[in-house]
Image 1 (cartoon, rainbow, N blue to C red):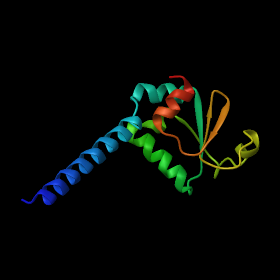
Image 2 (tube, rainbow, N blue to C red):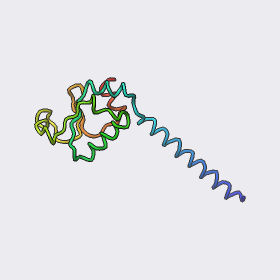
Image 3 (spheres, one colour):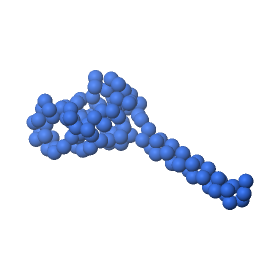
Image 4 (cartoon, helix red, strand yellow):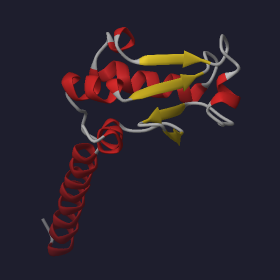
Length: 119
């Protein structure tokens, strides 16, 4: 192998290793929470959704990845059935979390919800 080829090969290997390290760091920062922590969040929150909202579907997918039975203990309010919640909670979009009587719009990662709910 020529010197230039060897140098190029070493640089490519280093870049691949760096990418793997960065991906693992990002993954660990968004790592899931335990079922017990999700239940703690559920005790302090409501999740307002729409059955046709793509962001709501994503939020439910995230919750289901922690516990497929999350609907048994998390208070889910669908605006399709309860349009009055927009006015009741002074919100304009979904998904919206109501945690400790404060509103948080959009999709939220489990660790973020844990921090907000102080669980």
